Image (cartoon, rainbow, N blue to C red; front, side, top):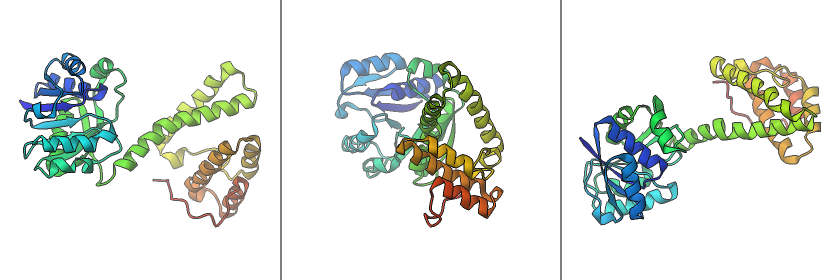
Amino acid sequence: MIRINIIGAGRLGKTLAALARRSGRYRVQDVMTRGADSAAAACAFIGMGRAVTEWADVSAADLYLLAVPDAAIADCAQRLAAASVPAGAVVFHASGVSGSELLRPAAARGAHIGSLHPAFSFADPAVALEGFSDVLCALEGDAEACAALRELAQAIGGRPFELADGGKPAYHAALSVASNYLVTLTAIARHLARQGGVPEELITPLLGGLMRQTLENALALGPQAALTGPIARGDASTVALHLQALDDEGLRAVYQALGRQTAALAGERLSEPARRQVLSALGVAEDSGPVQSLAG
């Protein structure tokens, strides 16, 4: 049995610990939180473990999960190292944006360091425990840590993959754009539909069907092939009318920024004269700098 200690027993920490215990390959040993009651409650949820509140009382283990807020990871790594983490152990965290560099104090004591981030919502641990299956888990860190974390991810029902060195911020930005910004764009579209006089009860079906179809096309065909609309066909007059309808400077700036990226994504589908006309309608200067191609 592989021994695992959990530092911090929030929703993610206790769910991963329970999944590890359920796999039959891991023994959850110590569960440490700042309060004895929360540690005991986490142990009860996990179905195993000893409640601990002091660093000095944490037993030696094979794996240490620092399931704490990002701002606390480095400090916890320092405290764990001071409490004598055994050489050869794997110390890891589950932050989506931060890398294993936050765990360097543990590496200085001979531990292997890494991170494992499941692309999954742990809002309700009981629901997450039952629904965690074939979940993509991003790994990074040193080779030994990644090997151990790959084994853990597979044991709990995950599908592990490794990120490039230093790739965590871009990886997490991708998730945020795909998830959070999609919600923001939905809000903007709803606002504009309402401004245009669409009845409230029709806004969701009007936008929902189009958004679902567009997303399915973009995922199945690729963004460039799925791209339609006035910018892709060089309809500068329609773009100008859109901007006239946007009387809020913030929304205009969003439309202009996305429009510039969309024109770049259209690529060779836009002739050079059409591209210039679209950029002019968007209010984007020709010398405003290159736009990275997003066609891949």
